[in-house]
Amino acid sequence: MDFGMKNRLSHIIKPKTGKTVMLAVDHGYFQGPTTGLKDVRKTVTPLIPLADCLFITRGMLRTSVDPKSDVVLCLRVSGGPSILGELSNEDITTSMEEAIRLNASGVGMSIYVGASNEDRTISNLGRLVNEAERYGMPVLAVTAVGKEMARDARYLGLACRIAAEIGAHFVKTYYCEEFHKVVEGCPVPIVMAGGKKIPEKNALQMTANAIKEGASGVDMGRNIFQSDNPVGMIKAIKAIVHKGASVEEAFEIYSKK
Ligand code: 5RP
Image (cartoon, rainbow, N blue to C red; front, side, top):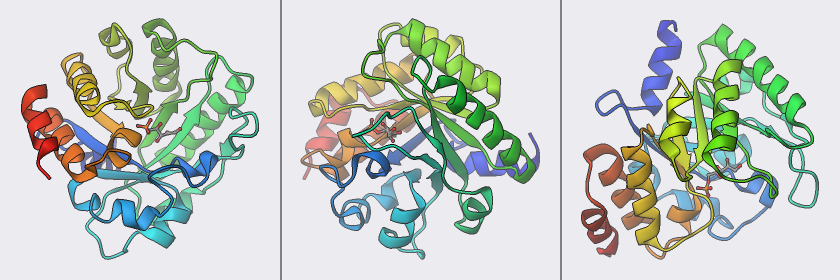
């Protein structure tokens, strides 16, 4: 890795702890105005100072984030289908030039291992990495999971390993039983997606488990912005990820209004 790549990646994964708390607010790129993200500006403004990095599309960045805010960006650069179509039918939608112009520290896209367009999404990842390497731009591969795919260590381990083999610099995947096996098979950092909203204590427990099993942090959305206390929730997640707080300590942080 050259200087630019390492330096950008260190904006996202903080060198002091080797971890990151990314806030994912990209859901609208296929779900439209989903719960908690109907007004993206309103949702993200109080959370930006607390997130290590924002995972967001260029459209929401331009319309809903103050350019003067002290924010690190990972730009969602894939898309195509909506929830009404075949989700795996994705392509790259945002150029590397645009990512650089928007001052991104990373770019992210989904791969659909086991779905009908797995081969195209994986070769899209290869093309994105080829281009990103020219500019020193880290690539996050998101292991998107089709409705019919099991969220287990075997499947997620396969998807994460493929992402790393193709050249992703870091990978986002879901938590599963025996998550450590997913981490062990993947030589680049893994960040955990939160998935559907669950009770706050369970989300904190899942985060603590993932960190214990080797995750380099989270790229979490709904379990933060759909919480009844999003600010408390991101502070609690940060305490676990960066400070090794217990679930009980973190729950107390979340509970403070
Ligand atoms: C969608 C994504 C989301 O960013 C990802 O799912 C993280 O959000 P959540 O914690 O809500 O699952 O990549 O494809």
